[in-house]
Length: 53
Image 1 (cartoon, one colour):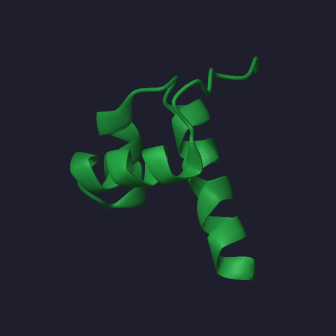
Image 2: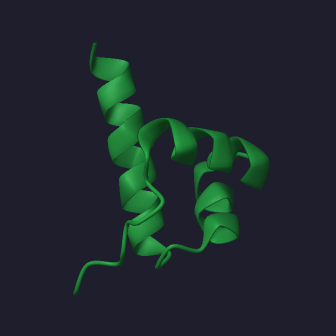
């Protein structure tokens, strides 16, 4: 399905853009930090590092 793939990509992009800062990434996505952490666990995004600009 498309929506889960797009959602995962949004979470990856937000995590990279905020250098792994969960609070900033959650705010950027308009969700709570707790919801962000649930999705982070679901998508196994704990070890994403920022990409060089």
